[in-house]
Image 1 (spheres, rainbow, N blue to C red):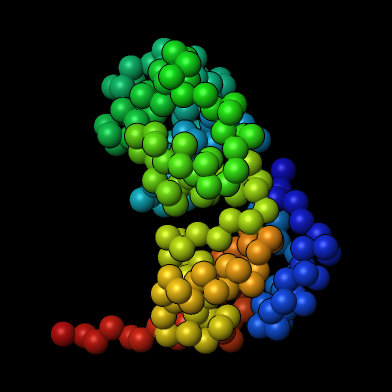
Image 2: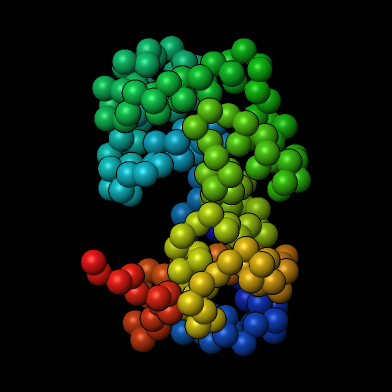
Length: 214
């Protein structure tokens, strides 16, 4: 399952932004996998913080092999030590078990998040231990498939924006200018900024000032 978008979104973005239009034409359609289950998506994102994609995939596979299905009940029945033994840090294991217990006891209403506005959903998810604003934004984009997510806290997105728009720095004010321009399809724009940051167009460079070596 991939993030769904089509000509409606890309034609709108191209009409609003000539630089991004050129990128969209060169890169073509992007297939980015999404999560189908909100609980497992939160767990998946907690695991993935500050580790490589490969390490995240390894731990996630171990969880699926161990529990069969990653649900609040299966994870909640495991101890913190059992979760840690799958390869994650003790703190992440605590966060994941705490989240599971909040779902089981009804302290946190995960189903309600799906019906919230972007702002309220980010605030609700960020109230959980181990979930910050950036992680909440990624959950909205890659699980809830919200159409208008552009994360200032995502370093690769800011790198991609520097490369597309030839800026040395993307500060909050400049970021908000582009967010307004690209709304209501910021999520699709995010896919292209990530692609550019990852080298999808080899001739594009990062205009950030080089750090002086000591």
